[in-house]
Length: 182
Image (cartoon, rainbow, N blue to C red; front, side, top):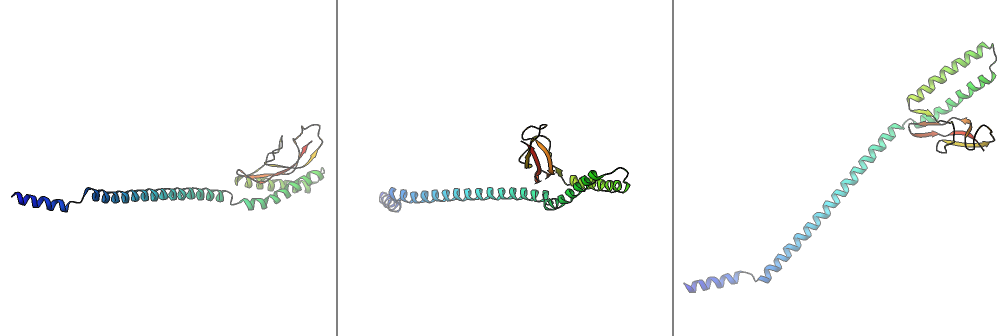
């Protein structure tokens, strides 16, 4: 039986690869596994970046949609401001020419006042407000058309409003045109 054991051990040695060959095969497997892990990390990174870009785009789109809905009436509001200016002018003209006892002129003024008040209420309902023009000039909402001498105002203060300015929500529709003190 010892011959048989010897034959078996010789056959086993012949079948068993040399330690160098196993290491070579293992190295190839390890290299391939490492490459696959690196590729997986790259794809995971690409996925995460793409997903983040998608989420950012989605958020920006929602924000743009809200802004578009909020300011959809902006061009209409700009167009209606000339009507408001005409009412302001008509009321100022009637005030300037108002003579006592002119019943017809008083009725016209009353009708214009009511219509003007109603128009201002409708604008207010739609978040359109008049720009404040008291005190110091603010270049973000006022446009200085001219400078005038004034003893009752400090330099840079608004002396006269030439045309009212308006905002819609937080956005400026039209700056107020003003004259300021020198």
